[in-house]
Length: 293
Image (cartoon, rainbow, N blue to C red; front, side, top):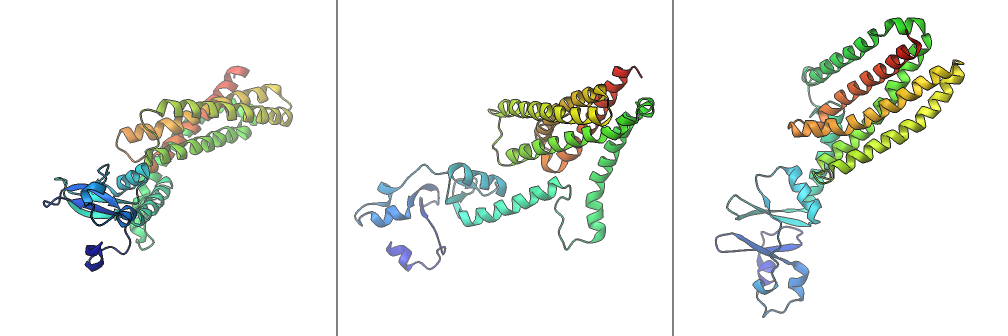
């Protein structure tokens, strides 16, 4: 206590006092409130706690934030490769990190990466070009699927009217699942122990929502076009596409993460492609088979 009163080079606010050896090796820590309640005759070693969770200086700031969250830390010792204390991180530092990482994830989900308002027009256009090009390729793929059933669409105009509904519902369902998956991967809430459970849960959600909206759109389509067959076809396609959307929304981010690609910036393009292609193929293919066109 006397040392802290006399020492000028101390943080403005701190919660723990880290204990080191003469070689600066981290030994443990003492809670500040416990130090104040302990008599002067007690040694620091006797009140020191050794269940510490140090952070290596080379660790990424996102990993440091995860350690703070996992162990509910207010501060953490920063050590080098030899276990020697080189600094301290506090919860105030981590709040800034969490804000930066959340902002970065939002940008990546929109496919804009690390853009800043100060970037030039050329730099921004260049950074967005790749993902727009990939999106163009996937859109052409969806159009190719539609082209396979051009004769079916020509004979039944109702299919062209209802076709965007199936793709749109699948796209939205896939995006919802994808957002949850990307965030769970970023925060380490999804790991090898609960991945199967989360996949099963998302599949069940896809089936339930698919069945509910299938009944709704099936009734609307049957009444709109005075055709029970149309209602059945779009209902079945809706269930199938929303189920595939749920699976794509969870599996694509996991696959990209396994390949060391950023799920936040790459998932949306592939999920949208899957839901569009599957939706169009299921709806138009089922109609062609049902009506023998």
